[in-house]
Amino acid sequence: MQVSLTISPSKAPFILPSHQPITPTPRIQRVSIQSHVGPVNSLKGSGYLPPINRAIEEDEYRIARSQVARKGVDLEGYAIEGISIGGQETCVIIPEFKCAFDIGRCPSRAVQQNFVFITHAHLDHIGGLPMYVASRGLYSLKPPTVFVPPCIKEDVEKLFDIHRTMGQVELNIDLVPLDVGETYEMRNNLVVRPFRTKHVIPSQGYVIYSVRKKLKKQYIHLKGKQIEKLKKSGVEITDIILSPEVAFTGDTTSDYMADPRNADALRAKILITEATFLDEGFSIEHAREHGHTHLFEIIENAQWIRNKAVLLTHFSSRYHTEDIRAAVSKLQSKLSAKVVPLTEGFKSMYA
Image 1 (tube, rainbow, N blue to C red):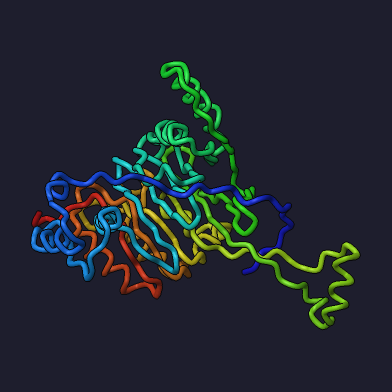
Image 2: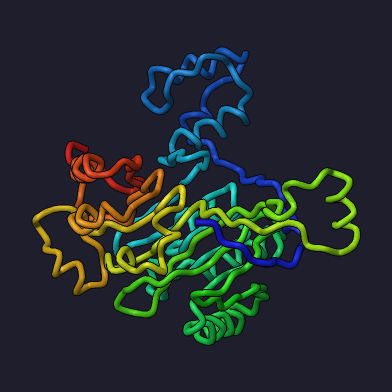
């Protein structure tokens, strides 16, 4: 499905480069660096670092080590990282969009993101917001743009007023109440739209679209000079085409899958959706009563999922990585989309 709309052009936000220092562990600091080979070889058998094929500078090494420690995933050309543990914290980051979805405890890597999309007001999804804004101010980054359901805008403003009074600090934020059906231009080739979800309190998901221009059908037969003449005369010769790239649900029951108005969420390249409960230990009724989705419901609705990849999040903290992998296998057998879990923060039962 292609959607056409007119969008007023705007300047893409200026993005500062990320310069986030990574503190080396004491074990690395005690290494005497006489050459490029010494420190790398000395750590190969330590268990802290996978083998490295070549010697690298100390700063490069620290950066590489921090990347190895993260359990991010690469899906459909996007690097996605973060953490999502049911009832504890959720923050899913897509650096290519300079955005984070929800911000339960403000992981340090979220601070560099210019946009934050809040799905609902539970603390494990919004609790880190004041720290995020304060941290950007501390590092002299521009005020972030934070999207919220319109019904919580006033309460979020009050929350920041309280923090300004208590901390006697400036907390600069561009707070945007974005409702279902509205469109916001993040940059000239990227827009976002909320969609309806169903949780125990007001909630909404978000779809991020790429934007491109396509010559209108009635002008396809024209030659270059004719098209240029029309353009100079002020005629709009192109349509704006939106292509859903990433959809994020936040906490929700599976009802959003059956809503035809949410078709774009289910045909985006990547669907990031919750799966709080994974097995027979909890019933579908229990999941629905608490405003969550059971894996069995995703399997039941597999026919509606047209995404190229599905990233499962928000597993209950009672699960181990082995439980999560087993659940992913069950779902993968029912979907043509690639199914991947976000497992940062979860441990093996053998750990």
